[in-house]
Length: 374
Image 1 (spheres, rainbow, N blue to C red):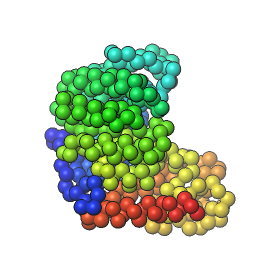
Image 2: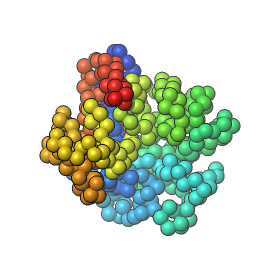
Image 3: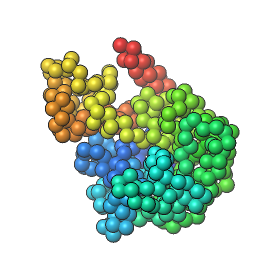
Image 4: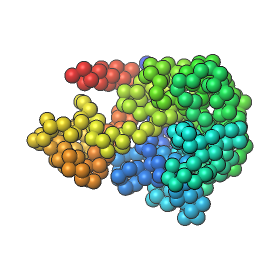
């Protein structure tokens, strides 16, 4: 199936919209949240479990798969879908954020990025062209252009220089793309400067043209209100008929807020990372499972949740596993958190379908505020 995106319905009270992505590996309903399968696996879960939790689209990372086991091996073995036994759509991040995170281990120039592997210190070079080559070898359904993630804080001059590099790499990425079945998204940088974000949108959407557009350089340490303001402003400038992807933003209240701006796609490590550290999301509160108050609590983690964990185990048992450092703690916690996020997206899509998204948003945020204040 040739890649395409359609808007199914718009919420009359907000900027929220229902959409559908069509890819070679199936359809994706939007707004969608992508669990992160950085190295070809959602940490602690089998791919079949991830699918059964309601996941339609996952994110894997070019940087990590390039280093280990190598894109040539994955291509030789039939591509990433076959390699990890995942038959649904996959989006691959170009690795720009991971390179940004390397700090002193990387050096950026006009040609690309020279960096040292975080695994063994070996030296590597990735250009925009190679990032596309790697992603085409992986066979992902949606590829991302290599970009430079603008740091926070950054002055205007540095952010402008970084944006120029990202736009140049975007042009080269578009030229390098060969596989017509794979979509390619451009990434909007520009720091916290509206003028630069506008420049990025105009260049990427009007002069180059991509299958979708991602907002990068957010959730990198800036105040939450700055993230929301830049997201709202930039989303309003983007082409209406293309999917809009907010990279790395994943707290439930931020997802609910940014869907109102017209964002269609989200990813974040929050559900899996928080699960490993014992922070569990429920429809009533955030549960820090190590707390002594749960020592003899025989109730399920969330009585309104339909996941395997909540249907079969008590808070007391989950606390025991976590305190005892049992691997099962990580598995059961992650099952719940991923299901919580999938159920949240299902509720968001239902609210849009019913034309009541603003009502849903206000109710959700009020409950979140009340839980925090307790």
